[in-house]
Amino acid sequence: MDTTVTLRATAGLPAVTLPAIGQGTWYMGEGLNPRHAEIKALQQGLDLGLSLIDTAEMYADGGAEEVVGAALKGRRDEAFLVSKVYPWNAGRHSAIAACEASLKRLGTDYLDLYLLHWPGSIPLDETLEAFEQLQADGKIKRFGVSNCDLDEMQELAYTNGGDQCAINQVLYHLGSRGIEYSLLPWQREQGLPTMAYCPLAQGGRLRREMFGNPELQAIAGDLGVTVAQLLLAWSIRPVNGRRDIIAIPKAVQPEHVQQNAEAIRLQLSDDILHRLDAAFPAPARKTPLDIV
Image 1 (cartoon, rainbow, N blue to C red):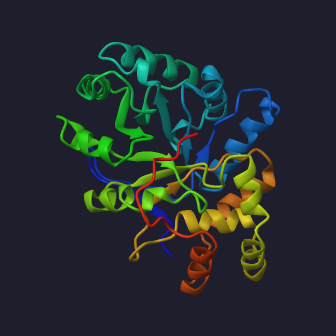
Image 2: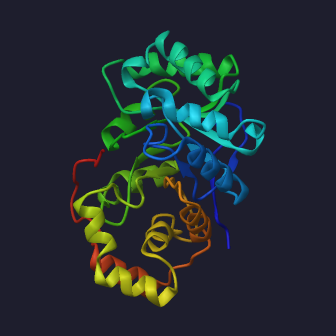
């Protein structure tokens, strides 16, 4: 069973194959968990093949990048490292300074992927110019975007250099399926993969509803897995035999890291997918892009 997602060749770089589940770092570096536990969790994930690590200058004001840097000390070559730039730092010169600051916190010379965290007021062509300069300087290999809806992706596609975008990172989980109506089909037509953040839903009412849902609990019980593993397997499920979604759950507890790694091989039958659709239906119309 193929458990990988391929980023297409861009900017003179060959296509790259990544695990369909990576590691998120939102809320790391904020003191919610011991720093050593966060570092150990990321290293455990690397050991288990979860080589993609996603972070951002926003997370803990750079603190999450420092945690990632500590986790990757002596292991940088084992990771596919992703970080993100604030939209107000995405200018012709400011994006270069922001990237250099991220690299310093991460203790590395380059990023495998650099994302615009969400659309802002700085023109896209200016951001792309900065990204291209960072590529030319060897500081980033690929670039992409995050929190972009269909109209923003179409604008990007028609902007000079926008066709080199490697991925769009958006909120996506079983309880938030809005991208399936128009954004996800369009990206699939373009051969553009999706990175799903909060694949287990953000904390709050919706998360409690999902994890406490009797049908999800019954399906997970039938499969001998946790509800979290079921949700992860659903988020990265193949469509027409091909995977094009990478989920990036955050985990600190060792058992959660282990469960995330195991979920990558969980196959869901058509019957189970139908039951999940009935419990949390796909959208019947265009809805605003979910962002947290």
